[in-house]
Image (cartoon, rainbow, N blue to C red; front, side, top):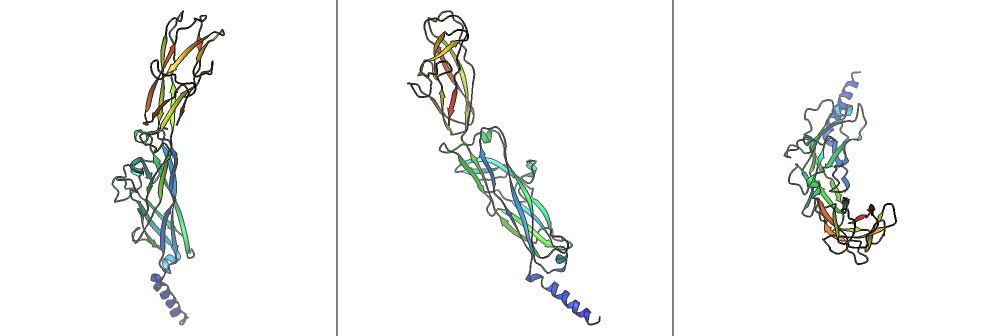
Length: 335
């Protein structure tokens, strides 16, 4: 036994002395954040997630780390391209911007915006400990974390344009502005997560899509016993299209005549009919679908709802039998 003790002491001395030759190393990586298609006028938030990975290669022969290899990491995030502030961050396409932000949890609270000590208004970071476990063999160990992102609904989103009347990709790059500091240790960590550092990157994308909504109010003509002069009425189309999105609106020929140049209302009881005209201006060209001498109404979206007036006229004609006369006209918006 007297000869064995020096030999064991020598082995332990070799183990402690080899630390500098086999240091543990850690990295952080993250998948991209993709919001997919975003309609700026939808009136709803858009959310997305990404997965981050913290990995460590435990190879140190430090006795404590041989027993329980651990690593502590603190992960921060800069502003990314197209942003001058974290309140909010912005995606870009040329000079156009779309507001969004990145969060450390799904509360999407301002206090949970992912940033760091050097990012004004966004102090939150990811912090975690990776433990390989008691007597874990040398090798690579990993843990993951979830990143949350949101594009909020509101006036800022509604103002986002598409470009050249096509779906438009907005993006931000975080190449090199994701940063982390970490410490590998055994039984006790006396350095927090400040011993070593590194950087990582990812991109955030959202595609602004052309979109429009349309709604109509009824048109009602006044009661008349004989049709010896014009009867007039109006109704309103409420049109909302994505900013810079060109559109055309067609009115079909109606359910009675199916003829854009000769629309008719029908008595709800008899077969009698009454002719009428629709136009975008008072006594202007017939509003139809571009056929039979009719024209469509065109415009460009602003992101806000725009009222368009439909002018209706029942011209002088042979008076039909008394009754209620109706027709159903469909408005279609092309964008």
